[in-house]
Image 1 (cartoon, rainbow, N blue to C red):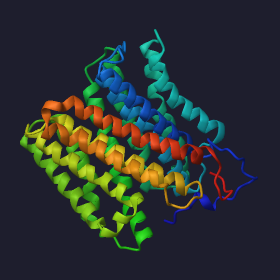
Image 2 (cartoon, rainbow, N blue to C red):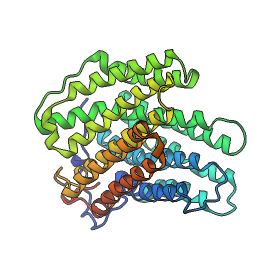
Image 3 (cartoon, one colour):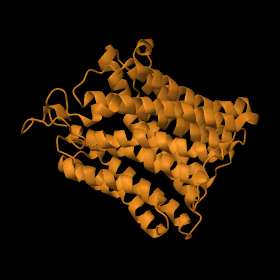
Image 4 (tube, one colour):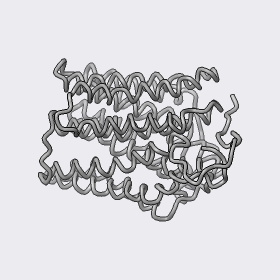
Length: 397
């Protein structure tokens, strides 16, 4: 199946100077970058006792929810709205329609802080975003009859369910938030596994003219073992069986990423940041296996997936997609290389520091959070003009 590039879609009229809603990646990537800085800043201030937040839910759950459904949700929306148009040649929402989707996401972030806002209204607004994105990408996928990509609307449907499980507990209906969070984390990991397998070796081979090794069994086992680990975690979170399943998943993903390896990519920050990001998925499964044996805390495995894989891969993908889809050379500003280093350090500190120095856990959270904020602040500073202005080559998108 031949892919149809956005670049091949001819402009119907001269492009305006500013186009913040020309294509999905623009508002959602910028929104994700700004929100991630504000979110971690608020969380650190609350965690250190400098900001007394009067929340109707546990602060840790609010932090987890906004990282998954707020920050990661925006990145997923921006990426899929852009990628599906690129895959199918069928336009996804832009202009007013895209603005409505973006402000629906934004409303889900802001409604939470409106005093005396009914919890039911907040839940309804917040849950609505993923179904809206699902409909927006399902139409072009169905129109193009791309069965290969039909799994992405399904993942969005499961993310919707996971968000509903979280809100169900907040509304007092059932104790389902923990299940909702685990389901959301693994669905996002699954999306990174699928997309990472497509784009990381492709980007690497295209840039360096190398040839990544791929094995059919490994490519098939990568998503299967991811889902199997999810099932085991939900049913038997602490057991040798779950440890074995997670260890198999770690081995499969390690073999997969080893097949993509070439020392040449260390000279290309836009490439090594993606490989390191996928490497955090391997680390997450290793720690999941150890947590199932009660050797390490389960939170370390979860943060390997979130602070590590999600944080690093999203920053790397946003940096690359934003350049490529605005007609620019795939060479980010030097300071963006610093951002890649900072997000890597942020993840390493958040996951490894508590293992090495458990007595200074709160310090690890503070330092990791500050590095995270600095990394995404750099992204916003450099990429805000790129995301707001029209393509430099005059094409739409």
